[in-house]
Image 1: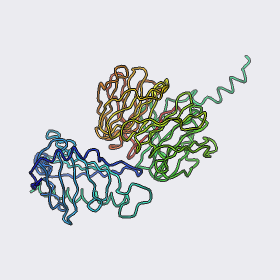
Image 2: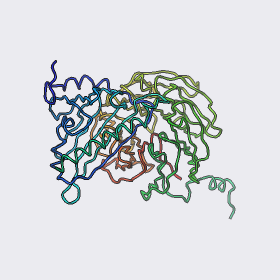
Image 3: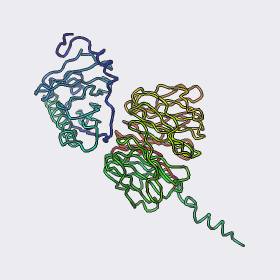
Length: 180
Length: 316
Protein backbone atom coordinates (compact mmCIF):
# COMPACT_ATOMS: atom_id res chain seq x y z
CA UNK A 1 0.00 0.00 0.00
CA UNK A 2 1.39 3.35 -0.99
CA UNK A 3 1.24 6.01 1.69
CA UNK A 4 0.69 9.64 0.94
CA UNK A 5 2.13 12.38 3.01
CA UNK A 6 -0.50 14.06 5.24
CA UNK A 7 -3.49 12.88 3.26
CA UNK A 8 -3.44 9.47 1.67
CA UNK A 9 -4.98 6.07 1.83
CA UNK A 10 -7.14 5.07 4.71
CA UNK A 11 -5.04 3.93 7.58
CA UNK A 12 -8.01 3.54 9.90
CA UNK A 13 -8.10 -0.21 9.43
CA UNK A 14 -4.47 -0.44 10.40
CA UNK A 15 -5.36 1.34 13.61
CA UNK A 16 -8.06 -1.19 14.36
CA UNK A 17 -5.70 -4.09 13.76
CA UNK A 18 -3.23 -2.58 16.17
CA UNK A 19 -5.62 -2.43 19.09
CA UNK A 20 -4.77 -5.93 20.40
CA UNK A 21 -1.14 -4.84 20.60
CA UNK A 22 -2.14 -2.26 23.18
CA UNK A 23 0.83 -2.08 25.45
CA UNK A 24 0.58 -3.82 28.76
CA UNK A 25 0.78 -1.09 31.34
CA UNK A 26 3.38 -2.73 33.48
CA UNK A 27 5.04 -2.61 36.81
CA UNK A 28 6.37 0.94 36.85
CA UNK A 29 4.19 3.83 37.94
CA UNK A 30 2.37 5.93 35.41
CA UNK A 31 3.84 9.39 34.85
CA UNK A 32 2.18 12.67 34.05
CA UNK A 33 3.30 15.81 32.25
CA UNK A 34 0.92 18.78 32.04
CA UNK A 35 1.91 22.00 30.31
CA UNK A 36 0.04 25.22 29.70
CA UNK A 37 0.89 28.31 27.73
CA UNK A 38 -0.99 31.58 27.28
CA UNK A 39 -1.29 32.67 23.69
CA UNK A 40 -2.15 36.16 22.51
CA UNK A 41 -4.54 34.96 19.80
CA UNK A 42 -8.15 33.82 19.76
CA UNK A 43 -8.95 30.18 20.59
CA UNK A 44 -10.25 29.76 17.02
CA UNK A 45 -6.94 30.89 15.62
CA UNK A 46 -4.95 28.55 17.86
CA UNK A 47 -7.30 25.68 17.05
CA UNK A 48 -6.82 26.33 13.34
CA UNK A 49 -3.08 25.81 13.79
CA UNK A 50 -3.38 22.45 15.54
CA UNK A 51 -6.75 20.89 14.73
CA UNK A 52 -5.56 18.74 11.82
CA UNK A 53 -4.00 15.54 13.16
CA UNK A 54 -1.01 15.92 10.85
CA UNK A 55 -0.58 19.66 11.34
CA UNK A 56 2.10 18.62 13.83
CA UNK A 57 4.55 18.37 10.93
CA UNK A 58 3.97 22.07 10.28
CA UNK A 59 4.34 23.28 13.83
CA UNK A 60 6.57 20.84 15.68
CA UNK A 61 10.30 21.41 15.12
CA UNK A 62 11.20 17.77 15.84
CA UNK A 63 8.74 16.22 13.39
CA UNK A 64 10.02 15.84 9.85
CA UNK A 65 7.02 14.07 8.39
CA UNK A 66 3.50 13.00 9.26
CA UNK A 67 1.40 10.50 7.33
CA UNK A 68 -2.32 10.12 7.84
CA UNK A 69 -5.56 9.96 5.90
CA UNK A 70 -6.52 13.43 7.12
CA UNK A 71 -9.57 12.18 8.97
CA UNK A 72 -10.57 13.17 12.50
CA UNK A 73 -12.38 9.93 13.19
CA UNK A 74 -11.65 7.88 16.26
CA UNK A 75 -9.21 5.16 15.21
CA UNK A 76 -7.49 7.15 12.47
CA UNK A 77 -3.71 7.01 12.76
CA UNK A 78 -0.74 9.18 12.03
CA UNK A 79 2.81 7.96 11.47
CA UNK A 80 5.32 10.47 12.75
CA UNK A 81 8.90 10.55 11.53
CA UNK A 82 11.48 12.55 13.43
CA UNK A 83 14.34 14.53 11.98
CA UNK A 84 16.64 11.60 12.90
CA UNK A 85 14.57 9.14 10.84
CA UNK A 86 12.95 7.26 13.74
CA UNK A 87 9.19 6.87 13.46
CA UNK A 88 6.19 5.82 15.57
CA UNK A 89 2.43 5.59 15.18
CA UNK A 90 -0.35 7.38 17.03
CA UNK A 91 -4.09 6.80 16.98
CA UNK A 92 -6.86 9.36 17.42
CA UNK A 93 -9.08 8.59 20.42
CA UNK A 94 -11.29 11.67 20.35
CA UNK A 95 -11.47 14.87 18.29
CA UNK A 96 -13.93 17.62 19.16
CA UNK A 97 -14.07 20.91 17.23
CA UNK A 98 -16.51 22.48 19.69
CA UNK A 99 -14.42 21.76 22.74
CA UNK A 100 -11.27 22.37 20.68
CA UNK A 101 -9.45 19.31 21.87
CA UNK A 102 -8.17 15.98 20.71
CA UNK A 103 -6.86 12.94 22.47
CA UNK A 104 -4.64 10.24 21.05
CA UNK A 105 -2.29 7.46 22.04
CA UNK A 106 0.86 5.82 20.76
CA UNK A 107 0.01 2.45 19.26
CA UNK A 108 3.51 1.36 18.38
CA UNK A 109 6.08 2.75 20.76
CA UNK A 110 9.58 3.23 19.41
CA UNK A 111 11.99 3.73 22.26
CA UNK A 112 14.61 5.16 19.95
CA UNK A 113 12.17 7.92 18.96
CA UNK A 114 10.54 8.61 22.33
CA UNK A 115 11.50 6.51 25.39
CA UNK A 116 7.95 5.82 26.61
CA UNK A 117 5.79 2.69 26.79
CA UNK A 118 2.03 3.12 26.98
CA UNK A 119 1.33 6.76 26.22
CA UNK A 120 -1.89 8.78 25.96
CA UNK A 121 -2.19 12.51 25.41
CA UNK A 122 -4.71 15.35 25.15
CA UNK A 123 -4.18 18.76 23.56
CA UNK A 124 -6.76 21.37 24.36
CA UNK A 125 -7.48 25.05 23.58
CA UNK A 126 -9.46 27.18 26.03
CA UNK A 127 -10.41 30.85 26.17
CA UNK A 128 -7.89 32.96 28.08
CA UNK A 129 -7.88 36.56 29.25
CA UNK A 130 -8.47 39.57 26.97
CA UNK A 131 -9.60 37.46 24.04
CA UNK A 132 -6.53 35.29 24.18
CA UNK A 133 -6.17 31.55 24.67
CA UNK A 134 -4.70 28.99 26.97
CA UNK A 135 -3.24 25.97 25.24
CA UNK A 136 -2.78 22.91 27.39
CA UNK A 137 -1.08 19.67 26.53
CA UNK A 138 -1.00 16.74 28.86
CA UNK A 139 0.41 13.26 28.64
CA UNK A 140 -0.05 10.18 30.79
CA UNK A 141 2.51 7.49 30.17
CA UNK A 142 4.86 4.83 31.45
CA UNK A 143 8.59 4.70 30.99
CA UNK A 144 9.88 2.43 28.23
CA UNK A 145 11.48 -0.15 30.55
CA UNK A 146 8.80 -2.44 32.00
CA UNK A 147 10.77 -3.93 34.88
CA UNK A 148 12.52 -2.67 37.96
CA UNK A 149 15.89 -0.90 37.77
CA UNK A 150 15.76 0.62 34.28
CA UNK A 151 18.89 1.73 32.44
CA UNK A 152 19.15 5.54 32.52
CA UNK A 153 18.02 5.99 28.90
CA UNK A 154 14.76 4.10 29.62
CA UNK A 155 14.08 5.52 33.11
CA UNK A 156 11.16 7.58 34.42
CA UNK A 157 13.36 10.63 34.20
CA UNK A 158 14.30 9.97 30.58
CA UNK A 159 10.63 9.49 29.67
CA UNK A 160 9.55 12.65 31.49
CA UNK A 161 12.33 14.75 30.04
CA UNK A 162 11.54 13.57 26.52
CA UNK A 163 7.86 14.46 26.86
CA UNK A 164 8.61 17.81 28.50
CA UNK A 165 10.95 18.67 25.62
CA UNK A 166 8.37 17.66 23.03
CA UNK A 167 5.64 19.73 24.70
CA UNK A 168 7.79 22.79 25.39
CA UNK A 169 9.21 23.04 21.90
CA UNK A 170 5.87 22.26 20.26
CA UNK A 171 3.93 24.77 22.34
CA UNK A 172 6.46 27.54 21.75
CA UNK A 173 6.07 26.96 18.04
CA UNK A 174 2.25 26.91 18.16
CA UNK A 175 2.31 30.16 20.12
CA UNK A 176 4.59 31.77 17.56
CA UNK A 177 2.45 30.65 14.61
CA UNK A 178 -0.84 31.69 16.23
CA UNK A 179 0.44 35.09 17.30
CA UNK A 180 1.71 35.96 13.81
CA UNK B 1 -25.23 2.88 89.94
CA UNK B 2 -23.04 -0.08 89.22
CA UNK B 3 -21.08 0.13 86.01
CA UNK B 4 -20.27 -3.13 84.34
CA UNK B 5 -16.51 -3.55 83.88
CA UNK B 6 -17.27 -5.26 80.59
CA UNK B 7 -19.12 -2.20 79.37
CA UNK B 8 -16.28 0.07 80.41
CA UNK B 9 -13.86 -2.17 78.53
CA UNK B 10 -16.02 -2.05 75.42
CA UNK B 11 -16.33 1.73 75.60
CA UNK B 12 -12.60 2.15 76.01
CA UNK B 13 -11.86 -0.09 73.08
CA UNK B 14 -14.49 1.32 70.77
CA UNK B 15 -12.58 3.82 68.71
CA UNK B 16 -15.47 5.35 66.85
CA UNK B 17 -17.57 6.39 69.85
CA UNK B 18 -17.63 10.13 70.22
CA UNK B 19 -15.51 10.56 67.12
CA UNK B 20 -16.23 12.02 63.77
CA UNK B 21 -17.42 10.64 60.48
CA UNK B 22 -15.36 8.30 58.33
CA UNK B 23 -12.16 9.43 56.71
CA UNK B 24 -10.88 8.65 53.23
CA UNK B 25 -7.18 7.93 52.76
CA UNK B 26 -6.16 8.76 49.22
CA UNK B 27 -2.73 7.61 48.04
CA UNK B 28 -1.15 10.24 45.78
CA UNK B 29 1.13 8.23 43.57
CA UNK B 30 3.07 11.08 42.02
CA UNK B 31 2.90 13.32 45.08
CA UNK B 32 4.33 10.65 47.38
CA UNK B 33 1.70 11.24 50.04
CA UNK B 34 -1.67 10.27 51.46
CA UNK B 35 -4.45 12.88 51.54
CA UNK B 36 -6.76 12.42 54.53
CA UNK B 37 -10.33 13.54 53.79
CA UNK B 38 -12.88 14.12 56.53
CA UNK B 39 -15.94 12.83 54.70
CA UNK B 40 -18.28 14.85 56.90
CA UNK B 41 -16.86 18.19 55.84
CA UNK B 42 -15.35 17.15 52.51
CA UNK B 43 -12.08 18.78 53.55
CA UNK B 44 -8.56 17.41 53.32
CA UNK B 45 -7.50 17.63 56.97
CA UNK B 46 -4.01 16.18 56.68
CA UNK B 47 -1.43 15.09 54.15
CA UNK B 48 1.04 12.40 55.18
CA UNK B 49 4.30 12.12 53.25
CA UNK B 50 4.89 8.47 52.50
CA UNK B 51 7.22 6.49 50.23
CA UNK B 52 8.07 7.36 46.66
CA UNK B 53 5.01 6.24 44.64
CA UNK B 54 2.33 5.06 47.06
CA UNK B 55 -0.49 3.18 45.33
CA UNK B 56 -2.33 0.43 47.24
CA UNK B 57 -4.16 1.07 50.48
CA UNK B 58 -5.99 -0.89 53.19
CA UNK B 59 -7.18 -0.17 56.73
CA UNK B 60 -7.40 -2.59 59.64
CA UNK B 61 -10.99 -3.21 60.79
CA UNK B 62 -10.21 -1.69 64.20
CA UNK B 63 -9.22 1.49 62.33
CA UNK B 64 -5.85 1.68 64.01
CA UNK B 65 -3.53 1.01 61.11
CA UNK B 66 -3.31 2.12 57.52
CA UNK B 67 -1.19 0.02 55.17
CA UNK B 68 0.11 1.61 51.98
CA UNK B 69 1.90 -0.32 49.23
CA UNK B 70 4.56 1.27 47.08
CA UNK B 71 5.83 -0.91 44.21
CA UNK B 72 8.50 1.62 43.34
CA UNK B 73 9.90 1.59 46.89
CA UNK B 74 9.26 -2.18 47.13
CA UNK B 75 7.68 -1.47 50.47
CA UNK B 76 4.54 -1.54 52.56
CA UNK B 77 4.24 1.47 54.85
CA UNK B 78 2.42 1.24 58.17
CA UNK B 79 0.68 4.40 59.35
CA UNK B 80 -0.76 4.89 62.81
CA UNK B 81 -4.17 6.39 62.15
CA UNK B 82 -4.65 8.09 65.50
CA UNK B 83 -1.51 10.21 65.12
CA UNK B 84 -1.31 9.99 61.32
CA UNK B 85 2.29 8.99 61.62
CA UNK B 86 4.42 6.58 59.64
CA UNK B 87 5.46 4.01 62.25
CA UNK B 88 6.97 1.17 60.24
CA UNK B 89 8.25 0.22 56.79
CA UNK B 90 8.21 -3.34 55.51
CA UNK B 91 10.52 -4.09 52.59
CA UNK B 92 8.57 -6.56 50.51
CA UNK B 93 9.38 -8.28 47.24
CA UNK B 94 9.90 -6.60 43.90
CA UNK B 95 6.60 -4.89 43.15
CA UNK B 96 3.96 -4.91 45.91
CA UNK B 97 0.75 -3.26 44.68
CA UNK B 98 -2.62 -4.84 45.44
CA UNK B 99 -3.46 -5.22 49.12
CA UNK B 100 -6.44 -6.73 50.94
CA UNK B 101 -7.29 -7.29 54.61
CA UNK B 102 -8.49 -10.43 56.28
CA UNK B 103 -11.92 -9.43 57.71
CA UNK B 104 -10.74 -10.01 61.31
CA UNK B 105 -7.70 -7.80 60.69
CA UNK B 106 -5.21 -10.43 61.81
CA UNK B 107 -3.38 -10.47 58.51
CA UNK B 108 -3.30 -8.90 55.10
CA UNK B 109 -2.38 -10.00 51.60
CA UNK B 110 -0.09 -8.30 49.11
CA UNK B 111 0.25 -9.24 45.44
CA UNK B 112 3.66 -8.82 43.82
CA UNK B 113 3.37 -8.32 40.07
CA UNK B 114 7.02 -9.00 39.29
CA UNK B 115 7.38 -12.12 41.39
CA UNK B 116 3.93 -13.57 40.53
CA UNK B 117 3.16 -14.31 44.17
CA UNK B 118 0.71 -13.26 46.85
CA UNK B 119 2.06 -12.94 50.37
CA UNK B 120 0.10 -13.36 53.58
CA UNK B 121 1.45 -10.93 56.20
CA UNK B 122 0.76 -10.83 59.93
CA UNK B 123 -0.75 -7.40 60.67
CA UNK B 124 1.01 -7.04 64.04
CA UNK B 125 4.45 -8.55 63.49
CA UNK B 126 4.62 -7.81 59.73
CA UNK B 127 6.16 -11.22 59.13
CA UNK B 128 5.34 -13.16 55.97
CA UNK B 129 3.26 -16.17 57.02
CA UNK B 130 2.75 -17.72 53.58
CA UNK B 131 3.67 -17.12 49.98
CA UNK B 132 1.32 -18.32 47.24
CA UNK B 133 2.47 -18.76 43.64
CA UNK B 134 -0.24 -17.43 41.35
CA UNK B 135 -0.44 -16.43 37.65
CA UNK B 136 1.50 -13.78 35.76
CA UNK B 137 1.40 -10.22 37.13
CA UNK B 138 -1.17 -10.56 39.92
CA UNK B 139 -2.87 -7.16 40.05
CA UNK B 140 -6.07 -7.32 42.08
CA UNK B 141 -7.11 -8.95 45.35
CA UNK B 142 -10.38 -9.48 47.17
CA UNK B 143 -11.12 -11.48 50.32
CA UNK B 144 -14.48 -13.19 50.78
CA UNK B 145 -16.39 -11.54 53.65
CA UNK B 146 -16.39 -14.93 55.44
CA UNK B 147 -12.59 -14.83 55.41
CA UNK B 148 -12.32 -18.25 53.77
CA UNK B 149 -11.25 -17.37 50.24
CA UNK B 150 -8.93 -14.95 48.51
CA UNK B 151 -9.36 -14.04 44.83
CA UNK B 152 -6.47 -12.88 42.66
CA UNK B 153 -6.57 -11.42 39.14
CA UNK B 154 -3.55 -12.43 37.06
CA UNK B 155 -3.28 -9.65 34.55
CA UNK B 156 -0.87 -11.21 32.07
CA UNK B 157 -2.58 -14.64 32.14
CA UNK B 158 -6.14 -13.29 31.81
CA UNK B 159 -7.21 -15.42 34.76
CA UNK B 160 -8.68 -15.26 38.24
CA UNK B 161 -7.27 -17.54 40.95
CA UNK B 162 -9.05 -18.77 44.06
CA UNK B 163 -6.91 -19.35 47.14
CA UNK B 164 -8.58 -21.40 49.86
CA UNK B 165 -7.58 -19.73 53.12
CA UNK B 166 -8.40 -22.82 55.17
CA UNK B 167 -6.14 -25.20 53.27
CA UNK B 168 -3.81 -22.43 52.07
CA UNK B 169 -3.84 -23.83 48.55
CA UNK B 170 -4.50 -22.26 45.18
CA UNK B 171 -7.72 -24.17 44.66
CA UNK B 172 -8.76 -23.19 41.13
CA UNK B 173 -8.04 -20.74 38.31
CA UNK B 174 -10.53 -19.63 35.67
CA UNK B 175 -10.28 -17.50 32.54
CA UNK B 176 -11.75 -14.02 32.60
CA UNK B 177 -11.28 -11.10 30.14
CA UNK B 178 -8.01 -9.67 28.86
CA UNK B 179 -5.74 -7.95 31.36
CA UNK B 180 -7.89 -8.32 34.49
CA UNK B 181 -7.05 -5.72 37.11
CA UNK B 182 -9.30 -4.65 40.01
CA UNK B 183 -11.20 -7.38 41.86
CA UNK B 184 -14.05 -6.79 44.30
CA UNK B 185 -16.82 -8.80 45.90
CA UNK B 186 -20.51 -8.38 46.47
CA UNK B 187 -21.08 -7.33 50.07
CA UNK B 188 -22.89 -10.65 50.69
CA UNK B 189 -20.03 -12.61 49.12
CA UNK B 190 -22.17 -14.10 46.37
CA UNK B 191 -20.30 -12.66 43.41
CA UNK B 192 -16.83 -11.58 42.36
CA UNK B 193 -16.34 -8.68 39.93
CA UNK B 194 -13.26 -8.34 37.76
CA UNK B 195 -12.41 -5.32 35.58
CA UNK B 196 -10.71 -6.40 32.34
CA UNK B 197 -8.59 -3.47 31.14
CA UNK B 198 -8.03 -4.52 27.55
CA UNK B 199 -11.38 -6.06 26.68
CA UNK B 200 -13.24 -3.08 28.23
CA UNK B 201 -15.54 -5.35 30.18
CA UNK B 202 -16.33 -6.74 33.61
CA UNK B 203 -16.43 -10.44 34.44
CA UNK B 204 -19.12 -11.44 36.94
CA UNK B 205 -18.18 -14.66 38.70
CA UNK B 206 -20.41 -16.74 40.94
CA UNK B 207 -18.37 -17.34 44.09
CA UNK B 208 -20.04 -20.57 45.20
CA UNK B 209 -19.37 -22.39 41.92
CA UNK B 210 -16.38 -20.21 41.06
CA UNK B 211 -17.78 -19.89 37.56
CA UNK B 212 -17.99 -17.01 35.11
CA UNK B 213 -21.67 -16.13 34.79
CA UNK B 214 -21.66 -12.90 32.76
CA UNK B 215 -19.46 -10.47 30.89
CA UNK B 216 -20.65 -6.87 30.67
CA UNK B 217 -19.10 -4.29 28.35
CA UNK B 218 -18.25 -0.99 30.04
CA UNK B 219 -15.85 1.81 28.92
CA UNK B 220 -12.20 2.00 27.90
CA UNK B 221 -9.65 0.69 30.41
CA UNK B 222 -11.93 -0.40 33.24
CA UNK B 223 -9.93 -0.51 36.42
CA UNK B 224 -11.87 -0.92 39.66
CA UNK B 225 -15.38 -2.19 40.48
CA UNK B 226 -17.63 -1.45 43.44
CA UNK B 227 -20.98 -2.99 44.21
CA UNK B 228 -23.67 -0.90 45.90
CA UNK B 229 -26.15 -3.41 47.36
CA UNK B 230 -28.80 -0.80 48.22
CA UNK B 231 -29.44 -0.07 44.54
CA UNK B 232 -28.24 -3.47 43.25
CA UNK B 233 -25.73 -1.80 40.95
CA UNK B 234 -22.09 -2.25 40.09
CA UNK B 235 -19.93 0.82 39.43
CA UNK B 236 -16.79 0.64 37.30
CA UNK B 237 -14.07 3.25 36.79
CA UNK B 238 -13.02 3.61 33.13
CA UNK B 239 -9.58 5.20 33.04
CA UNK B 240 -9.42 6.14 29.38
CA UNK B 241 -12.98 7.45 29.15
CA UNK B 242 -12.94 9.50 32.34
CA UNK B 243 -16.22 7.87 33.34
CA UNK B 244 -17.79 5.56 35.86
CA UNK B 245 -19.99 2.95 34.20
CA UNK B 246 -23.11 1.79 36.03
CA UNK B 247 -24.30 -1.81 35.67
CA UNK B 248 -27.72 -2.92 36.80
CA UNK B 249 -26.97 -6.25 38.49
CA UNK B 250 -30.47 -7.55 37.92
CA UNK B 251 -30.40 -7.24 34.12
CA UNK B 252 -26.58 -7.30 33.96
CA UNK B 253 -26.66 -4.39 31.51
CA UNK B 254 -24.81 -1.12 31.55
CA UNK B 255 -27.40 1.57 32.26
CA UNK B 256 -25.31 4.74 32.47
CA UNK B 257 -21.91 6.41 32.17
CA UNK B 258 -21.14 9.12 34.68
CA UNK B 259 -18.52 11.70 33.69
CA UNK B 260 -15.96 12.16 36.45
CA UNK B 261 -12.39 13.49 36.23
CA UNK B 262 -9.49 12.38 34.11
CA UNK B 263 -8.23 8.80 34.61
CA UNK B 264 -10.54 7.63 37.38
CA UNK B 265 -8.93 4.78 39.30
CA UNK B 266 -9.70 3.86 42.91
CA UNK B 267 -13.31 3.74 44.06
CA UNK B 268 -14.98 2.97 47.40
CA UNK B 269 -18.45 3.06 48.86
CA UNK B 270 -18.85 5.33 51.87
CA UNK B 271 -20.27 3.60 54.97
CA UNK B 272 -23.48 5.62 54.34
CA UNK B 273 -24.14 2.90 51.74
CA UNK B 274 -24.88 5.52 49.12
CA UNK B 275 -21.95 7.76 48.21
CA UNK B 276 -19.08 6.59 46.01
CA UNK B 277 -15.65 8.15 46.24
CA UNK B 278 -13.64 8.03 43.01
CA UNK B 279 -10.01 9.13 42.73
CA UNK B 280 -9.16 10.90 39.46
CA UNK B 281 -5.49 10.26 38.80
CA UNK B 282 -5.33 12.71 35.90
CA UNK B 283 -6.63 15.82 37.58
CA UNK B 284 -5.78 15.32 41.22
CA UNK B 285 -9.28 15.15 42.56
CA UNK B 286 -11.83 12.87 44.17
CA UNK B 287 -15.37 12.81 42.72
CA UNK B 288 -18.36 12.01 44.90
CA UNK B 289 -21.19 10.12 43.20
CA UNK B 290 -24.70 9.60 44.50
CA UNK B 291 -25.34 5.93 43.65
CA UNK B 292 -29.11 6.48 43.52
CA UNK B 293 -29.37 9.61 41.34
CA UNK B 294 -26.07 8.85 39.51
CA UNK B 295 -25.04 12.47 39.87
CA UNK B 296 -21.66 13.85 40.81
CA UNK B 297 -22.37 15.63 44.07
CA UNK B 298 -18.94 16.99 44.86
CA UNK B 299 -15.28 17.22 43.93
CA UNK B 300 -12.41 17.37 46.42
CA UNK B 301 -8.89 18.37 45.42
CA UNK B 302 -6.15 16.04 46.65
CA UNK B 303 -2.45 15.46 45.89
CA UNK B 304 -0.77 14.60 42.60
CA UNK B 305 -1.79 11.34 40.90
CA UNK B 306 -4.41 9.97 43.32
CA UNK B 307 -4.50 6.19 42.85
CA UNK B 308 -6.29 4.99 46.01
CA UNK B 309 -6.14 1.36 44.97
CA UNK B 310 -7.88 -0.60 47.71
CA UNK B 311 -10.39 -0.04 50.52
CA UNK B 312 -9.51 3.53 51.51
CA UNK B 313 -12.46 4.69 53.64
CA UNK B 314 -12.68 3.94 57.37
CA UNK B 315 -13.99 5.50 60.56
CA UNK B 316 -11.42 7.19 62.75
